[in-house]
Length: 324
Image 1: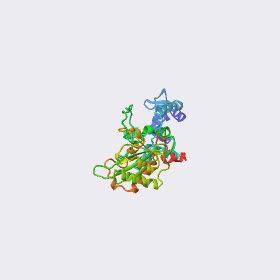
Image 2: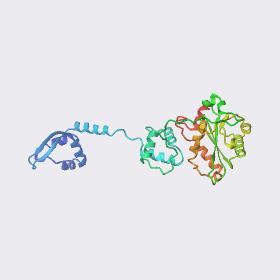
Image 3: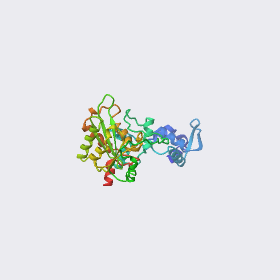
Image 4: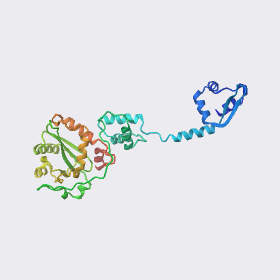
């Protein structure tokens, strides 16, 4: 274009104005205008024949230089593309997490994926639109945690203080934490929740009532069905449904350890896992209306979630496979 334009403005009476020049060479008028502005050399040629028209001299080198500067000022291209947003929304609607979606796409060969922090920022700013209540977890800025003073372990219980280092350090598979989620005020029963400390593998069981009898019956069934990939110890709290240590140890065939009173952080894995399960069953859920099929489906989903911090992006299934 440099040669064509500069030759044109030197043709005297035959020189074409910008609009005519663009039409003559099949170029867009706006495109020609932008190019002339970017590559203006600072020299103006006055056409005395056509009533004093002024033509700017054009340099392709200057035009390219200016275009490159503007391109550089745009910053990096966003990795949160429309295609990624569509995949993310579909996964979140299924109950999966942001980390699970990113992990799945990495496995499918996607490159240049955004970080979790970037995705949560776009969700917060409304760049990615998600139906209300479909975001399972949004990390918050954390403050230094105050660890409360430990309470006492009730008499005739094996204290968590007796737990060996290999359990405390999560060195092996088969050391479980156990808890219960209770139905809402108008409901009955609840949900038995167990999680392996090493692999974060989750096991769920329906309870018709929150009693020792119901818990013991559910544990017998889970053991008989071979639900646990490995079973070496249980850590639980001082709830009324876990009172009989001897009975629990007889059913499970492993030692049972009890946390200190008012110290739920001592079984933090299962407490955090309860929050994940609450995505599917909100507070107030009546578990007497939940089927065993639904429990199995949620257990599968919980074990399919990528755990960024605890498992470095792996799912519970993948963590078990890695140890096998």
